[in-house]
Length: 275
Image 1: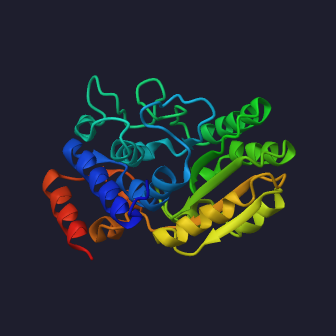
Image 2: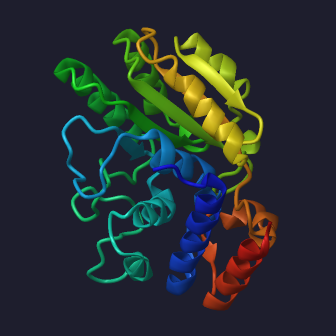
């Protein structure tokens, strides 16, 4: 089935707002910055079956920046892994949708993540296991730019290159902001592309990581590197809070902030009205 990715982006962005707005608080900025990536992966590029979430040899997505769980849930719900109504239980007692991704509770989540840096290492293990199994799966993983200041990210980067994990495609959400300040002010990553290349990875850079066509094209290009002997890093230059101007304007304050149901409804209305 072929999906309208631009419409999917609207649906996923709106449902992310719906879930966080119903709860009243959440990691909204870093969720909205990766809507396009999640939409392209789950609705076009990944070999998955929502009716059989544990399908052997399926492609996998590991969200190492686990606090972006709400946008992953929005993508999964729209893809048919569970009812959209469950999004309103986000991070509440007894929910299957905790704030950070949990593979035990949530259908479609392939790795529990939360502590930054650790999910990326898990993705290396999953990619290695897939190669040993020979199941043909592609392993996708997402890290944040603040997360990229973690030493274990670079340990995993060395491991992936050394083990020639060419079934691995990683993404950096390079929105330039983290919880306290800009990434540059805390511990600058530049030149980020050069760093990944120096670690032995194929590198693709996307100037506008919130342009669905550009993201789609980058994933297609990254898949051409499968079997090349190198893992691939796609650096997405994104806007934290993309799609909701007042959230963007909060800057570092949008990492985890209050969002009322009224604010969420107004933002959803504006997104739906966009051409």
